[in-house]
Amino acid sequence: MPLHYPHPRPPAAGTLLEVVPGVFWVRMPLPFQLDHINLWLLRDGDGWVIVDTGFADDDVRANWEAILAGLDGPVGRLVVTHFHPDHFGLATWLIEKTGAALAMTTGEFLTAHAVWNEVGGHGARFMVEQFRQHGLDADHLARFAKRGSGYRKAVPSLPDHYRRLMEGDTVAVDGRKWRIIIGHGHAPEHMALYCAELGVLISGDMLLPRISTNISVFAATPEADALRWYLDSLDCLEREIPGGTLVLPSHGLPFTGVQPRVKALHAHHEERLRALEESCEDVPKSAAGLLETLFPRALDTHQTMFAMGEAIAHLNHLEQAGRLSRSIDTDGVIRYSRLQHLAAAH
Ligand SMILES: [Zn+2]
Image (tube, rainbow, N blue to C red):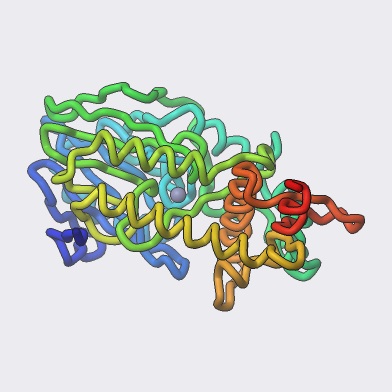
C-alpha cells in the first residue's frame, strides 16, 4: 500500500495552509541540503498554539514576522518536539515576541542546555573524541574541532523555564485532546502529538515520508543502541496510530500510511545492517571506514557528522544483537568484525 499525499503543494513562505480544520501548515527554509522544515499552527479558541520554531536565521525571522502579523489572536503556547536547532532555534525569540508559554519534555530541554554549554558529554569537543575513537581521519576531526558547537549559532539563546510534558499526557487545544507520544533514537525524549478526534499525528522527526530519520549516538552514552530505541518507537506508532491518520512530518509532505511507512523503514534499516555485516566479513572496520558502505556519495562536513552518528548507531546495534564483535586496536580505534564473532562462536 503506497503512501497517500493529500496536500501535494507546500504553503508559500510566510503563509499558512490549513490541512485539517484548525491545523495549519507553515514551511520555513533551512540552510542545508535538507532545505526546509514544516511547522504547525493550531487554532486554540481566540488564540494560537505554535509547534516548533524553525532555524535561527533572518529569513525565518522575516517569515515569522509576516505570519504573526496576520494572526487574529495571541499565541498562548509554544510546543517544541525536540531540541534540534531547526525545531528549537527561535524559541526564545518567539517567546519574547508573543509571550507564549513553552512546553516540551525534560529530556529535550536539558539536552539543549547541555549541548549549548558543552557539558556532561554533550557538544563538539566530546563528539570529536567520540569520532576519533571511531576512526575518523585527522582532517575531518580538525574541521569539527574548528567548527565548534554549531548549536550556539543556530540556537542563539535558550529559555530558562518550561512546562514539562510526559508520555501519555494530554494537552487540550481548542477543546480537543492531543496525546503526547514520546519516541527515542533521534533525540533523547522526542515528542509527537496525536489527536484522535481530528485523526492527525504531528510526528516531528520520528516518522518522515521519504527520508529516513537520522539516528545518532551521543558521546555521553557511547554504547547506546539508539537504532533499537528508534525501531521500538516506530513499532509503538504502528500499533497505536490508526491507518487513516494524517501524519504531519517535520520534513516532506503530509501523508497517510503509518503502517506501510513503518514497514519500509524497518526494511531500510535491516538492509543497512546487512550491508555493514558483509563489509566487516574479511577485515575489521571502523565506523569511519564504513561510511562509504552506508553513504556511497561525497559528504560535506555537516553530513559527515550525521553519517558518523548513523554508522555508530547501526554498529552498536549489530554488536548488541551479537551480529558483529567489537575490538579496540592498539591505535585506540574501535573496529567491528564478523570474522572474530564467528571464530569466537566455535
Ligand atoms: Zn531532529
